[in-house]
Length: 63
Picture (cartoon, rainbow, N blue to C red):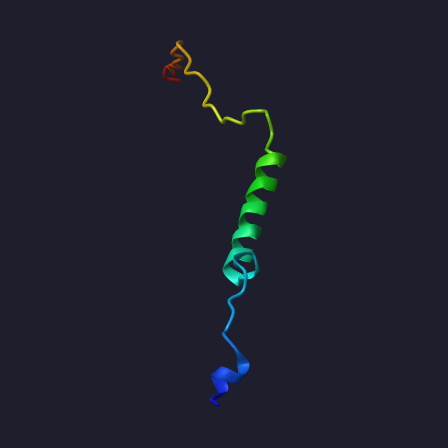
């Protein structure tokens, strides 16, 4: 008898026990948690002040 015949057929792990599937579970879990926690409902915008329509000039006359 050969060693293969003695040990029987090689069985594969179920898909949910494979390392790459566990990594997928972790990534999806983190994405769900991040989505549920959300962020601030306030919009943060940095707007530049509106330009003034007045033109101010200073004229200095001689001494």
